[in-house]
Length: 349
Image (tube, rainbow, N blue to C red; front, side, top):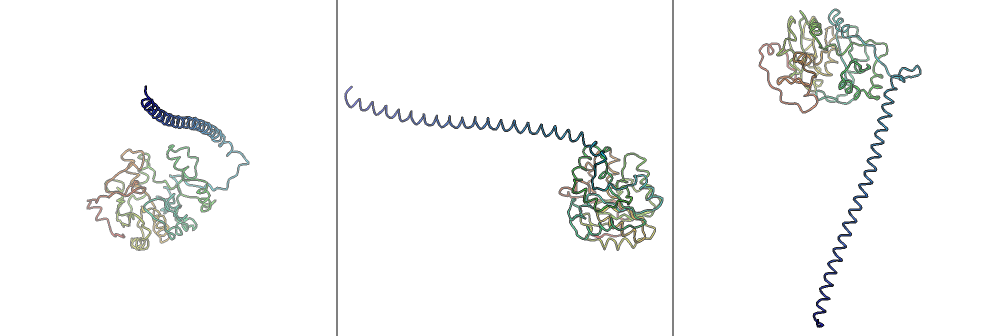
């Protein structure tokens, strides 16, 4: 091999060596990354195992706490500054409405939220004046007015379906319980605010006695359409309607009230108008009328008649339903019912 060939061979070997060095460097880099991934995965696995162990430990502790809770609450030294209001049964509440012609103004989570200056449902926005008037309903005693509360808010929840009980637990947090206690009266007897419960035909027949042979004026949202498409109001002597806004009805409160007091003194008002109904029943009672804040009675009746398990399953194209309260309201269809149209004596919206 002559000198030139040797130099060429050396040059080729140097190039191969440079390539090998570069390749080795790349391999070392990849190995380093792989080692980091393995070590990181190992560390992550160790952290995950530690987190799982902590969760299991907390679950055991919570189980012990839950098992012990009834006994701790029953202990003679346990004290809590919360009012559990005295409350009539459903049957006692209905008897006073039917036999003694008592009026009813009901307060639920939406009404208490309005007093607190917040909003829970689509049908009524925040209103300082509405909150003030609702507080007045709780504070001022009117002889012929029953103030109704949801008994589930102040119970052991033992009779409820688990989903319903969890709903109460989610709402009645300690801060909310304290707020209720600040507003309620320890010695006052409250009406049962779910007196429109329907679990059997007996419940339905008892409720219908409220308006049996009575001249009824319904004050409702323009899409509520109480009794339309069903026989809920069968037995009433006469039915007229005052239609109000389905949402934010309190903005039209004075006009609604002015229309209402045009009715005869023996009129029975059935009001389905969210928190506005609470104040309106209170004011109409003071004006000498019997007024019952009847709530979602039409949807409750539809649920019962259809054999559904939840009000949120009721979906009637021409009525404002519960699902419209929590999401974007759908386009509610018009209703073609000549009798319903004849019953309308005022539209305030």
